[in-house]
Length: 332
Image 1 (cartoon, rainbow, N blue to C red):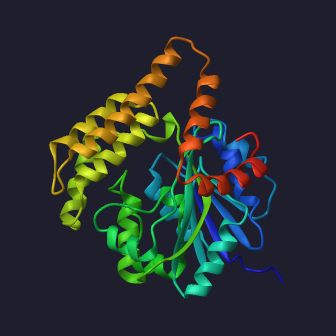
Image 2 (cartoon, rainbow, N blue to C red):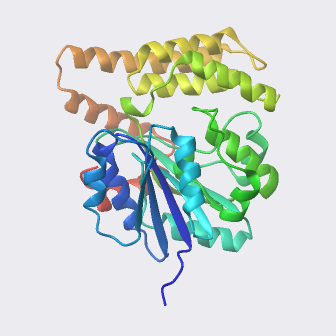
């Protein structure tokens, strides 16, 4: 008798074959849990279909849309087709530790909760860790969610009971950048406190291709969210989106979003914010200039990496992620 999977993993993808292989390997490396993998190919025009056909694992199902529809539509389609009791979302360029799903299920069972998240780190294109701190507590998440999205690594972090998703309703296809945040707010309103596995079990990959955003679109969605949730802190959201854009090489978008933060909102832009954002912009500008001048970027990156490592108060936390990243994805 075939066992029903405990978890349905939903991956929405479009033209990301460069990273999708590693992402799928991180799923099929999951230990001590039964699962299925549903990949929604959102009408890719690269070699995604050929790549997926090379995976001969019976746990993989591939569904292709008839036209590009966006991540929200793709995730909703995957959720509709899921048969697991739990649904876990994963972006097509991120990585999971081999224990990610099993630890989350254990945490959910111990706490008696219906949704959970883990710790996360941020990596660059070659797998070097560029950021990450221990996640906020469940109490903090519920308190902060109406103001901004405090859950690290976006949708790649979440596992939710299928019945809770059905109760909360689908991802809002009218939102492109904040559809996950909107969903977590609806889930929190119905599911109460989440469970949390503090281990850094998710690696969120930063690269130019994962931040295709227009500042005008972000501002429009912030206004939509402020209508739905009057407690939204627009200044913090703009600063966060600005940092993602600049660190992904989208300078113009990043600076425009930073200007939106400076212009202010319910929570004003402070001098402390200015110093922190200034250091971020200066570091990114120095790195970009060195690259244009043809300097040895690998050597520079190693020096920066070593310098940050020595001064990092969260070094032990990141080291825990380095263990599984190097062991499982040495060429990440």
